[in-house]
Image 1 (cartoon, helix red, strand yellow):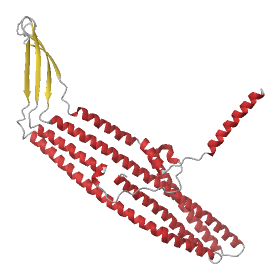
Image 2: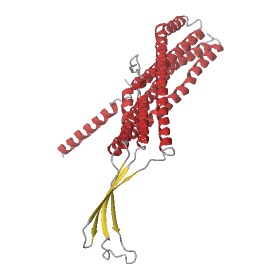
Image 3: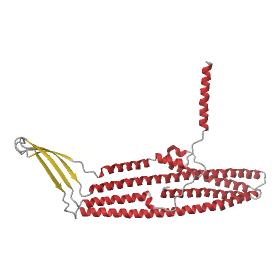
Image 4: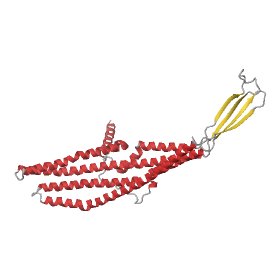
Length: 406
């Protein structure tokens, strides 16, 4: 009995120990890299695009094949008065095959168009992947900005509350005027006023993340901003997936124009039939049917003109996309460089100057409390702006990564 009790107690101790370890385990952090990985794994949009690529690949397998042959069955030369199959020697029962052959190189053009479709869908998948990463990075950065700003606001709130308590104490001791208390309360209210804005900003950004991450979007983000690559200075828009989509569309339109040109040549159909007759030799029938594209002005010419115009439109759209991507890269890089220069000035010049101002003002604490509060508010504004600037700098880095794919 004692051994049984000891065994139960040991099991209970082990269970409690495991429970305590689970409680002490740190909560998972939603790092930017983890957010990207989860989004790529869980986003339905990427799964849909992958299915489109698979479907386009299957299309290549059958696009250039011949149409299925047709089986023909029939009774030939049957007398109309008796409908007998044995009364007349010319009556026979036949079975045959019919195969159609498209005109010219229409089959090769269909294969060409299907291959272009695979390239287009693969490029669309890569473009979707890049857009997803860009949106996830932007939302994660907004969460980081809001929660970092909340920590700064909370830090200053503690200082503002201490200032208010100090001002109230001096007022009760008749060492300061009521105006000092009112100013301290106003300073605390200005700090508190910013909190709802940042909390709403964090909730909005997490709601965006939840679209791709699910419950993981509620996990805390780390306090440090992760580094992001900026890509290479040179940028070739032809390597961007949206540009590859446009080029694949040109190729698809060229295949359509090629099929329209093939229709100037006749397609044909081959029929072979074996006929069985009563008491007479069986017979074989073979014939070829040809299309006659003789009304070209009403059919082939307008169709070819239509396809050529669509091909030209695809080429113009590709050129427009090339210019758009080149302009986008130039604008984003200029913005990125601007943020980098502003960051340097903030970190090396402005913020140290504001900190020195606050410390110098604090030295005159007993003389003018209002100046100290104003200096702290200016420092808070600068630190909040620095957070925003760092996030904007990282956002432009994410935009560059979207363009370069690195």
